[in-house]
Amino acid sequence: MTLPRAEEVLGAHTRVVPSRLCPEIRLHLITADCDLWRATEEQAAAAGLVDPYWAFCWAGGQALARYVLDHPEVVSGKSVLDFGAGGAVEGIAAALCGGRTLCADIDPLAVFAAERNAALNRVDFATTTDDLVGQNSLEHEVVLVGDVFYGTDMAGPVIRWLRALAARGATVLIGDPDRGFLDTSGLEPLARYDAPADNDSDGSFMKPTTVYRVAQR
Image 1 (cartoon, rainbow, N blue to C red):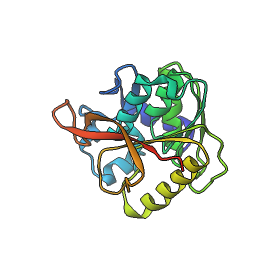
Image 2: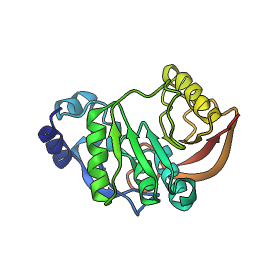
Image 3: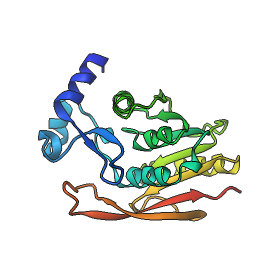
């Protein structure tokens, strides 16, 4: 998608609103007053939005961003990777707290949205659409992973990669609302939040969500 088309999609189909758990952060999101809130996949695709995961602030991402904002020492002055960034609520939180941040998502529109969200919040970070899974030579000191465990096929390779990064010394933090695909063995729970569920529009549906740290061993 060209940048002019991407700008059109954001302007026509999202609203600028604060994250529920992180009101300090504003994002371009599909909200309940947007036509696409109840759209089918076909309708969303016709509007230029194929798998628009970036347009929703998922529970795991919000919880992880809240944890970072409440514990800025985790990222301050450090190199940070926001993996599977989507709209980059975690990456923005890290940048606000002084982290030197790279936001990674294989969806070019997600990266575009992340950059626009960064501008909204007056922070800067680098972005990439490279597929980083399996790249164990990454030298980031902190890796943030908010709500990316949506299926068995991808969950296994991703958690093995994250364990390898932790074994090399990285602080790896995961936000997950117990979707059932994350193998939590060897993960240390750090905090638990009531975060908006996927279908929440007004704070009526909240989902217990845990922030974990991957053991360094």
